[in-house]
Image (cartoon, rainbow, N blue to C red):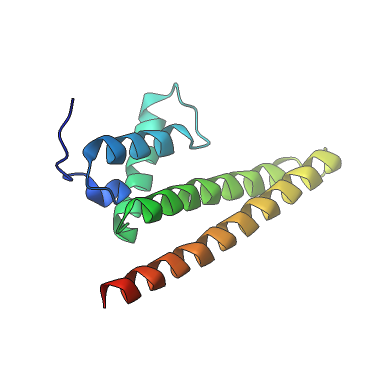
Length: 127
């Protein structure tokens, strides 16, 4: 069994690398890219992981919120792209994609607000 090291804390906010590595794997496999295209997956995965690292999860809760935020944002942007792909030819499909994109965007906003609350609560506890 792997011992807690926290070397990967920047990915998931946890003191245990089992958690951090698992969360990073789940985020990468949840991206709306062709999971069988190793080059695309690697490029998207490394970009998303870099974004998570830049957001600096302080604990596992922030790690989860940031991970969900990143994946919801990816989904929203992909759904917007799909909506505009053939909107003249398939209006109903495009309208549905726009609805789903808007829902994913609201999820991004909600997760961002919750992350802000979590960071505020965390900084007030450490004071």
